[in-house]
Length: 563
Image (cartoon, helix red, strand yellow):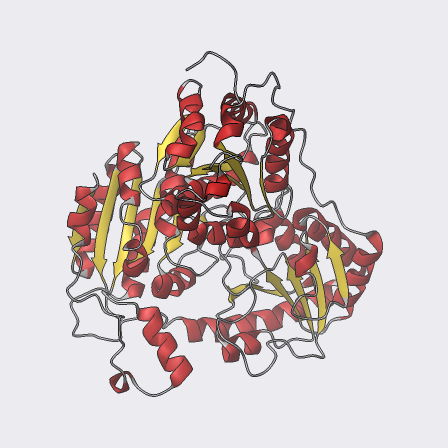
């Protein structure tokens, strides 16, 4: 330590001035100046045992703090992760992708070799910008300490400005060690996308009023709105008499599922999705992932359907379906404006007639979805996915749920009445996000005066990606309960094999899809500092979950379920 003020000190001070409390990371040599500066300030460094765990924790933290910031304007809902040069950045790409898909406002940094040394191609070398660019709103490297204050400020503003998402900054060793007399630049207020163009809103309102069978498809940008987007979506649904679905792979609560006009999440299945999207007029509000996993033979939406798009991401408006009206604006503000305009020009009789149709469709869909996750193996002593979901709701119906249960996901979504700001899931589809994100969510909840229980609902295949994420929960004494839905195989891949290739299960060996021998998840969790238990029968679930929630610290329940 020289006593001089360096680029690394400026980084630490800037983070503090922007309201950051935690830096998630896994340190390396090129990060030592930043880590040392953090140790001398008020920031807390949260250790992850793998860079992708650090990014996942930071993203789950940011998603949760975004909800908290609506009640407290002093909260900066940015997750910050510090990774270790090229291999460490490569390790973090899986959850950087997941953060992009989840719209998590992240600032990810990594050390790098000094700029005057790279021509020798030292170990760990790589192009950090090229590695991260496709998954970030902005990716760059600070090559001069004089540019550091502006680039740090820009990174936070880009991450926080809708549509929110990750940003990457490379921090070379020589820049971090360089002396400077600069100070952090003020962040300033973050703008929303506004209420939308009045002419576009008028056009959208006219089309909705003229509709025969309007459908509202809500996406996760509704839940991420700077205003109360969910309430605004409810207002539009009630004003227009529309039936409501969540987009395919929705990862947040975009509409209260107990509302009488709520029908279902759209499944990632061509036939089912196209049936539910069979309407003369559809409003796509805040959508981004509304398509199937593999190619579909026919359009999900009939080419003759009138389509209205509303959202704060111009790229998504009219992306996969034509836009007969497109409103670029904050979903909360724009949907509220649209609801007011529709309400002024539609009569009660029309709304009542539409609601009768909504009720009929809802009854049909609920009958079809009731069997999801139900017991298809009555002689199997393990729980069905439906039994597990029901037991969880009875015990922990008010918990904040972080979900990556994959094939158990739809049993949960069809049986649990979720309220706004109660649920986040893995939108990107790649495994290994949910468990670290649950740890980050638990840390975020611990900062509240009245923290909610945090429940991680994780499939066994997902859990085994990063079981050592539990170490971070134990190290920082976080109150987190993880329920592992354990069928000891990659069930999603078996299902997709049958969908893609046809035939029956007996026709396939399912190479690499079974965990034989099985991993002892409970003992593994105990080795990382958690209290853990294997739950082998349905009647054990509620008692085990009640006990776990009553205890402080991390708990892992490995619940055996059948396919």
